[in-house]
Image (cartoon, each protein chain N blue to C red):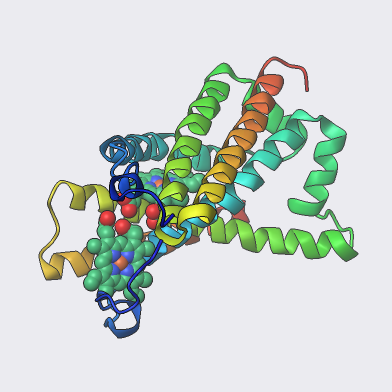
Length: 141
Length: 126
Ligand code: HEM
Ligand code: HEM
């Protein structure tokens, strides 16, 4: 479609001053996309490995969950998987927190500047604390 | 484009009148996601181990199998709507059409595999 290249454009990314509300807005999108791609694929892969029986699951497990002392490739991939798992846990909590923030803003609450900034920062504190609690707890068990 | 009458060029480019429904279902499934995903994450971390026997026992319990199906329904619908919004923000015209088609294939294929796996496990065939 023919667009007038000289049309007025709203001031965007390049000139805006960063703030917590802006950061959580883009984090909501980034975490949503990460969960919907990496998260959903890992989840489905895991389920189909379980459904394929103990042998198939054992090889999934060796590359993704626990290398069980095997060196080489399984050691590398399980380490990467661990990083991805911690990342996805954080992404989930962050997306959940900013998702709830969206729902609160949707009803028209939380627009005062101080409250808005505070809530935005809180979502990041909450997601980080919840991720730490969960993984430290898992690691100690 | 470029030929044809003015009315012919703009026809079909207006609102599809599905915006409010999209918005509302994104919120409805957000609520479903909170319930099912918190349950899932907590349950997963509470499993004694992640070996085949223990995940099988867990997924074969009827309550857990049904919760997993509800989770797949809510989460997959939610991210299908969400990724559509992302695509519509960055892709236009031809590439947008292709991206939306691929998104539908992606979501439905993954959902089918996930649901089939749950049913196979729950009905004791794995
Ligand atoms: C670094 C700068 C920016 C980034 C990374 C950014 C990113 C985003 C993203 C990812 C969304 C969709 C997610 C959401 O709704 O929360 C969004 C929505 C929006 N942005 Fe931005 N944006 C930026 C700057 C701006 C600026 C400068 C304006 C206006 C002058 C603006 C106005 C809006 C509006 C009106 C929405 C729709 C909100 C909604 O539907 O919920 N943004 N932005
Ligand atoms: C845990 C509870 C969750 C809540 C409360 C929640 C909430 C929300 C809300 C309110 C939106 C709309 C944002 C807007 O209108 O701009 C949204 C967008 C989205 N959600 Fe979720 N969500 C949750 C879980 C998930 C999960 C598990 C996934 C993926 C597997 C996901 C993927 C997405 C995607 C891809 C978007 C679009 C992002 C965008 O447009 O910027 N969400 N979520």
